[in-house]
Amino acid sequence: MSEILSTQVRTVLLKYWDPIGVADEPAASDEYDAYIPELRRLLAEQATVERLAEYLSDVESRRMGLSGDPARARATARALKDLNRRT
Image 1 (tube, one colour):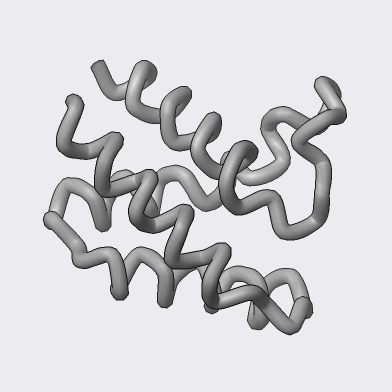
Image 2 (cartoon, rainbow, N blue to C red; image 1 turned 90 degrees about the horizontal axis):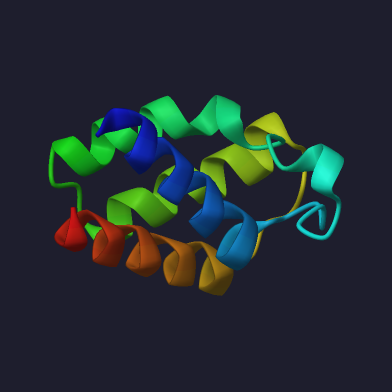
């Protein structure tokens, strides 16, 4: 089950978040995998949409050096929460 969830989180990150625009590059499908363990932990703890969005925004600004997109982070967080409800 954990591998399935990781794959689903990867899909959500590429579909909704993708701050560096690599979703259409098959060779880069694992670009955001480093963030999956923390997202899975947050989901297991029933983190709020706001907390998930905060984490994604933090990754964008602190780790990637980007200005970030709060609306995109919230949309991704909502998709992650929906994913968590289905598993």
